[in-house]
Length: 130
Image 1: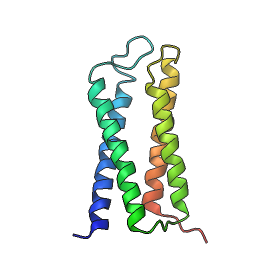
Image 2: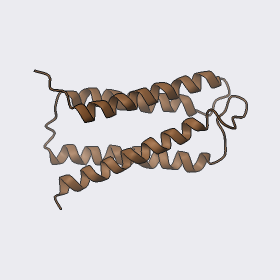
Image 3: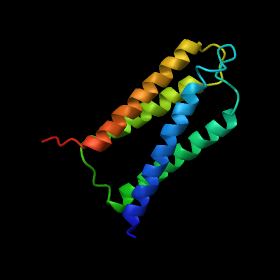
Image 4: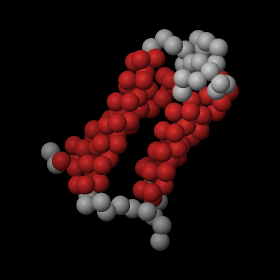
């Protein structure tokens, strides 16, 4: 099997895992919350899976860029921006800080899910700018 194809399959599999993890963590903001904090049940598992998927998505993305000699399409830069928006809003949503209201956490997660939807849309459509 070609290396680029193998890296792409791993990358997409990890993206699928990230979608499941994000939905699970979103549910923790609505069910079983304690004060202004998300549901603590399964927190370590969700956090571990989130870090695993995000780390290896980044790693496989960098390997893929290397294998393509860093030649990218113009929409790739929008993909990077949406990825950073998604990660930063997830950080805000799940930060261990009592001063962050539950409404702010939920809004952060909605922003993160919208960024993920935009990112997936870019990947599926692959717009051509000319």
